[in-house]
Structures are given as structure tokens and as C-alpha cells.
Length: 68
Image 1 (cartoon, rainbow, N blue to C red):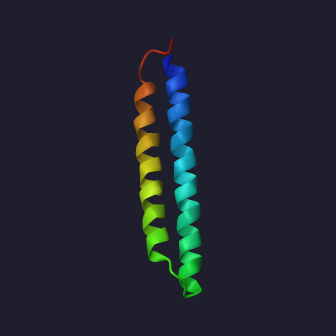
Image 2: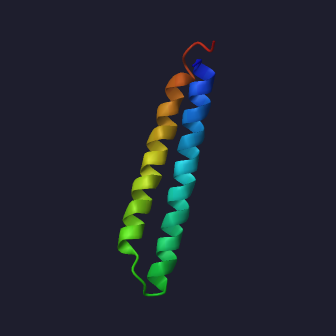
Image 3: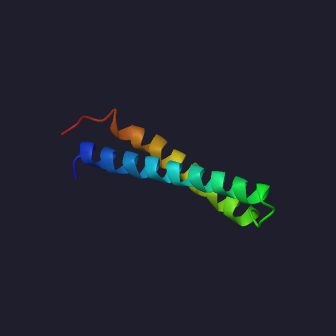
């Protein structure tokens, strides 16, 4: 797999995870406002959000490599 394809896949996955985590965190906040169970959902949302950021930042290593 060439460098551009690796970057594209990893950057896209990072953006999707970040967006999903953010959406889940907002939903957990709404659950909290309605006095529903929110802690587990909020914790999982933060884990997914941070994992997405890590994957996205890690994708930048392909930017500096020679693109085939």
C-alpha cells in the first residue's frame, strides 16, 4: 500500500472516530440534563474522541514521507 493511501485511510478513520466521540459526548450531556444515566456513555465517548485524535495525529507521519 502506498503512502498516500495509508495517509488517507488513517486520516479518514481518525476524523470519523473524533466526530463519533464528539456526537456521543453531546448525547451524554443531553442525557445528564434529563437526569438519565450518562456516566458510562460519556466515558466511552471521551475514549473514542481521544482515540480519534491520536489516530488523526499519527496520520501526519505519512505527510513527511516521500509519496509514491
